[in-house]
Image (cartoon, rainbow, N blue to C red; front, side, top):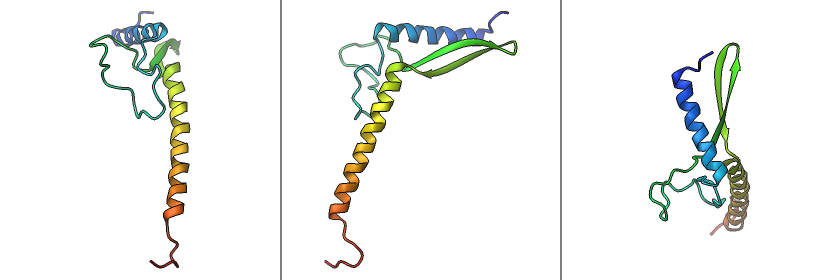
Length: 108
């Protein structure tokens, strides 16, 4: 069965991204947990393509081509580190607020 053009186009794009990621050209490589997102551009390289953090698989289900995407391993690892970092920030902020907050019955 022939792959529809729109699926083939997207599948080719994902394959390029997965190849870049496998080479280490991933936007999420060495990204700090405190970073809200990867940088839009990298100062050391002008227009080098990089994996945007996604991978995909192409399967046949019920006589239809199905393209499923998910986070690449580096993106998934960064997301896990990011969630831990955010939780630590919330605990730190709550502790700081608790120390400075006054209870309703305190004056001044």
